[in-house]
Length: 596
Image 1 (tube, one colour):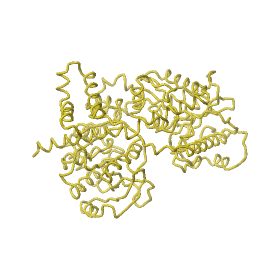
Image 2 (cartoon, helix red, strand yellow):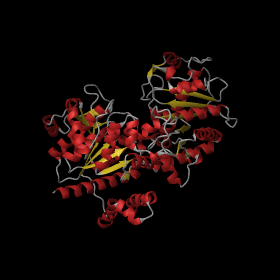
Image 3 (cartoon, rainbow, N blue to C red):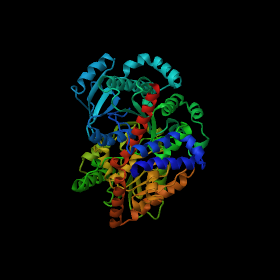
Image 4 (cartoon, helix red, strand yellow):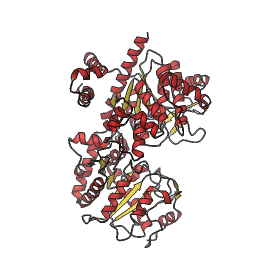
């Protein structure tokens, strides 16, 4: 039972340290948490769900990190619950083939007839990921006709301010409502009050549906997970100092200043009204406490499944193939032959220039050009999808040729054309520093502004199969609630550099009991609102340090990186989800007892 108690006691301890040394004051502020501990002690077991619904904008819709969370965790839940977990996503593809969705019309046939009577247009099937969980895709377009009525209801019931909505708010909210209606319909038709049922909603995009369930099907226990607060991301993205002034920010006031009222409102109100509010790291929990006025009940750290990583000879062959492709593309662009021992360094993720640390990575590469301690050729890839126009035909021609080229292509830092290259942040910073990949430069930088889906026209290799060819990865994030990219890196035996402002970096430091070091597989650089230059120097030094390692040292560090990643397997992190389910189910049971 120790592993179960420890998150609860850790939260108690953290609350005491944050709030007050006065235990009486602490107890009054944390009555429910302390009641939970007593319940666990008395019952010696958690309440576990008989059935789980889980909705996200990224179910069968690969957009960002949340897709990775859900798709890697699905097998762990599926193995435990055997089709008692249903994921709900938006039906964007309709009649088009969705490679992530395997439609199976006979699935849930009886309920689908009821769903049609309830005004729902759905498709049923399985998610094309390990575990093949059940999926319902719902068409949310019909609900736009009653949008204003829904927003009025949300204001009257939960004070959700949709008056200032714009952009993707309406689309997300209509999907969220449709998902809530799906859950209600299926619950009333096939489940009922004898079963313990949990509905987990991810990000502000699903908040409206969670609140709908909270009101109309109160028997269902609701869990809401924010992977990043909308207002925290906006503060950071607008170049305002987030961390040093976090205690002084008022989330609602800042939402008005940054024109984020509606997204902030649905996120805040959902966090306050669901049965269990969760987030993905202590970093984001701090944001939630200050900006949403609600700390998380449980921190759900993000894991992964080991079956993503090839083993043995397959691993060796894929790494060799990936390195060959990365060098081939660079040679074709640069018009030369990089040495076989070139150190390949990469960063990747969403194109958030400051938040993801792309700016400071380029700064570090620029400083590495003048670094006398750098004793190897470095090839750096920036793999972030931008406003891509398409693959370069001149580069494609060179890649198809067996000729060895001696002259570089124009714009030898770019694999794909951009629609607005003059105003692109990456190319602009490279231009500012005159980083034109000259033959004498010890550091060559190449920008890959597209999704590496396997058919990008240049590499034609999926992201994971290309990631494995790197020697070192750098994720110097300023704003990173968790950080899947560094976790994926070490899972593929690639040491990485990250920062103390990422949830993953904080977890590594807690695991090690001190700041992570490159020699241990992950270097965690201390980052603040104001130490940009120090971070750039630390990255520069890390690149030079790794370049100096001999073969035996490299092999040792790669092993340590992989061993660290094993501690983040879902089999280790899934326990926190069961803690969240327990809290939600107990809250729902108490609420329904009071109502009866």
